Image (cartoon, rainbow, N blue to C red; front, side, top):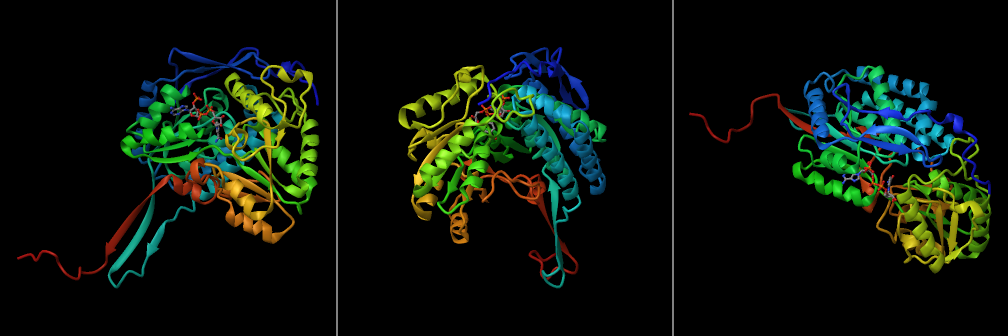
Length: 501
Ligand code: NDP
């Protein structure tokens, strides 16, 4: 394993912290309180961001409401709205390196992954731009001689968007362009740990021609900013990504005015390898899936189910690949695993590793430097049974648990033995086995002989406690709409209920 050297790229660190403010109604605001963010790899301050307040949320919601009720955005010709979203995609590409750098500095993700993420996000803006002009609704001409009807998509109104730190720019881009495509106005709260790329996005949207007040941003902590947004009577919908616990709190807080809630939550995703699979391909893909973003990935392959006859051989391949991963400075293009985002998450992961050491068998060996800073070397545990915490909890770190199984029925049973249902992967050479697994698994995505592919055209979201609603795909724009049914009488009504005299 490569030793960690975080000094090599120090010249890329900012001389003074970047300053991020709140955006309300087109102007930048301060609260008097600031949150400082240090790079988790380099441990120096990189940004300083306004700590938003509940009062700022009130102002931002009022600005969004005014922009929405003003009708110039929601009734804008879809072609013009699409042009603004398309322009935003272009400007995102033009500022890709800057966006990626800030996500690296604040989240610790490797620069190569951050650049891919920004490119994928730009594509979502383009896709949402294209969808804008497809929101046509329905017409009904078969309801009898004198009736016509229409079903209209109306923008849902003011949307509160709350995002996490693991994919700061990708996740906001899975939400915001679709909300705008539908004609909504937005108040967004990025994670307190990764506010910079969302702030740059605000600048990009202004430059792309988005009217003031349509997008507002109040950075800050979950409490008070996120909590104020979810409970706010002037917000019509919340789109949230984060932990299942906070997702449930969001649903509860939204009950006051019965907001619509879309939530993309956690996962404990099974990767299932059958004895007839191409084991080299599967090992490569699933190791990538387990350690991508240092395992801080809601669709990561954290549970590896291997069919008994190949369990030892496959686990050995996985351990070998894990041992050769390059852990280190996320600013280095060769790095594959950066640090964990913050001390709290690091501590949480280390506790799972400690419990794992007592209850299962650790197959990987960390070098002497393993305890350095917030870095966690990849860990593979085998002899894990489905009841252990290692097999049940979302660890959100580079920790892979190996569970053995025999045959399709047992694989389906273990795969579904979780409260989550976000994603899954099946590796097999048999079409029969693949299709039986596809039908049996309770998850929003099933990858077959591949992993982590997610083009903009395909919907993304979870079964069970992994979430509500879907992002991306054709349905994404509809998430941000309400249906309005219009019934038109084209001739005399057949009978009156109350005869007029
Ligand atoms: P959280 O769910 O706490 O954070 C996600 C977002 O919600 C952040 O913007 C956070 O604010 C905000 N938030 C926190 N509390 C509230 C609240 N009461 N009301 C409204 N918004 C709130 O995730 P964590 O960062 O604490 O991570 C913990 C675990 O969650 C991880 O270990 C992982 O298991 C899971 N997770 C899953 C993600 C996914 O992609 N599905 C993403 C991130 C985490 P703040 O800025 O203060 O954090």
